[in-house]
Image 1 (cartoon, rainbow, N blue to C red):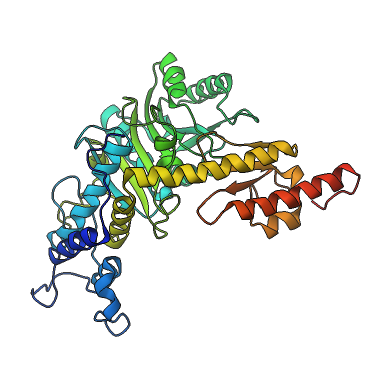
Image 2 (tube, rainbow, N blue to C red; image 1 turned 135 degrees about the vertical axis):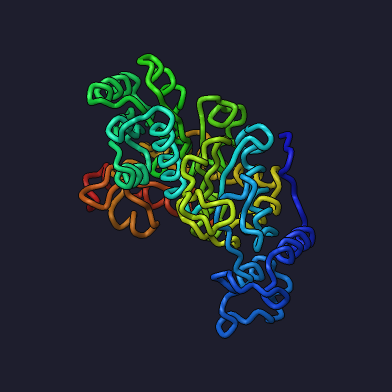
Length: 423
């Protein structure tokens, strides 16, 4: 793996860089800053002189409370927090180039509140793009995605007043059915849709399945329809690019315009840490010109954002480096493969994408008691589920999986002998 920016740094090196960034931010004790509607965390509650803070740069950042409003890859930003904003820009550039195959300084982006916000940001940009560049009416623009796509697409459709079309997937492979995609596009076009916002998945939340975005390119192209493709890599974005090297679900594909990543999943950053990355020239379509008091304007959905979450992502990436991260995901993939091998041995039906660490087991094999004991997540909480998923993360070790396999195996023996488990 040839990386331009991503490398491993020691704790001391990270501490020095973060300390310098914090020192480059506003110092409320040294500078007169009468107009900033923010300050450090309340010192009556969060004591800033605790001795342990000297060894914990992330906690020092929390106390200093940097505001990362705006998008710092575009140029002008609030100068009061320029030190830590630079670290956020470094994260966006590293992920764009070294993980997602973009050209140097060819992307913009920011640390969002999560994958949901990042997906809505993409839909917002492309809705406005079609309106401004093509004179599109709202009722001529629609979202299109697979049936397994995250519900954030439905939120985006509701908030942006757009129609949404879902394309059925094959029950076994979880892949989009081409003939149904073609039918769906024809149906939408017949209902007056001329512009499509495509949400293509890099690891669905329930199955870990991966869409082929070029299917959309082919079938939308057959009808000469305008489209923009956004990749929802909220789950798979920190595993699939490394577990499946040479894949084209990234910025090397000229049809892909933006990507969502979610650092509070695989990367184990604090919750509320999503990432939105988009090719340059597109973020401006959601510039809120009314935010004139914000230096550089505001073109994010969330507005004011904690800079500490950006620093957390920066620290995780540089603590592991690319090879350390590859070792980590390979460990998880090994455990996932081990689990699937044992499910095969006892005849339990499941779905798993070979480059992902999610295993969806058909619910017919899982009793309610077993699901509750092992914290399995169903595909629905309304009515009877069809699937339960297992996500192999750091805390899911072989011992835990072995215990689960023993119980599900025993349940299968009882079921085969006529003793039915309770659904």
